[in-house]
Image (cartoon, rainbow over all chains, first blue to last red; front, side, top):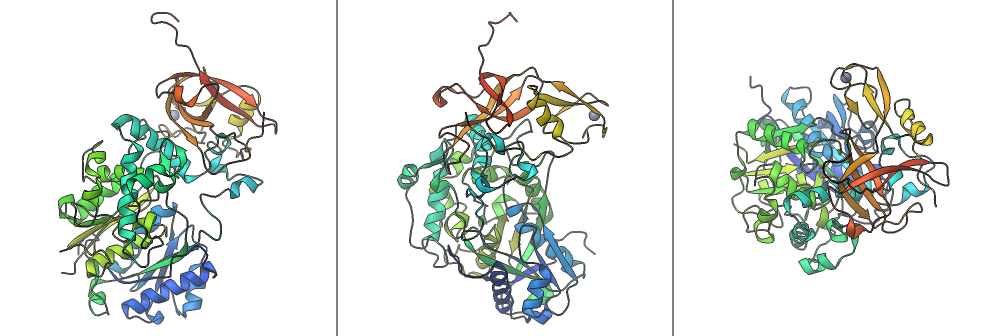
Length: 390
Length: 139
Ligand SMILES: [Zn+2]
């Protein structure tokens, strides 16, 4: 039997709630709605499910979701850490479970009221009586938001490679252009220009403007993972998992890996990339479209380098609006990404990758054979390559 | 003067904050292999020794990266404050603030020196300010 995960699991169903600034429902309800929608998409009943996997950060317990859906038994339940770095990792864990026969139908989910509830980028910490201990070496100095954590890396990247904030702005323009034609996107019909980007106010000077930062949102996304032979008999065209990988590297921290000699790269993503190419037998030239995690624009450039789409320091030349838009060399984030569609911790990017395989994206790329998806950056992370069924 | 968010110390990090309260910027030095480490942690990743001593940093360093967080506003910080990564001459890196310099005058690689500031709420923190480099060949 093959020792690799290659083509031994498939995504058979995708489901999501609407993306809003105030869902008016509990996070548990959003999770249940997303899981139910994904099962419905696959043509499966809740009774077929025997595994649930989510993020350590998710507030909805696996057994609570099972109780609401009426899932009778669970053989696998697990959580993946490190915020948005978990997204493709949850699918990898599900793929391992179905490839080994430990489970047959595993649903991965992530749902939150990140806008109407506790906001990552908000000022809730100003009212906290005690800081979490892991913030000790950053918070007393005024590094209190994910934007600020990312910016110290990106500032050095700008210095080393002659990159400007306008280079980052092109990612925002591409994402918003794609979101503009996706009715499910928060920024549907609201594209921006590079001038709009350059006029938006500083969040962290001179690195991140308002339009470089995704905004928190309420919503949920779920994905159904099954063995390929099971997926073949279900309602949708399966998206084969050609490769799945997680990666953490020396001195990895949660958003503040400042203690390496070189802080301009994303070694976790470099490791994930190496594993994805090795497992799939593919190269960057085999990828027709990608979802590159874009909570903040600078790390999209760094990912292009770590993944091998261009050489170190050359992303500023590769990442033009033309190259990354529909019709370009490597269209990215065709749903609008986290910046334009919704910030569901990367799970909506996997759903979009599945739509690209099925041929049902609002911004469908022609002749898609392989789609690459990455999870959160600046943290221990994960990635996937999805492929057409064989 | 003002307040600062107070660190939540653990058994592994208490020496560092106690050191600042006593006006000393301390670095962990492994007793097994003499490697320095920061942020504080219980085990040496090179030799797995749990034994270590604190040494006092010389306080001289260079700016590795710096930014100005502008939004959201915080009760503890004046608009325009500078957060920086400082490479200490000992070979470790710290998160800190740059003081007494206009943001436009800060450059990556700029020499800086540490001082310790006690804030109104009793929190003591290492801060950095520009340092005049001695001329080449002198000490
Ligand atoms: Zn040692």
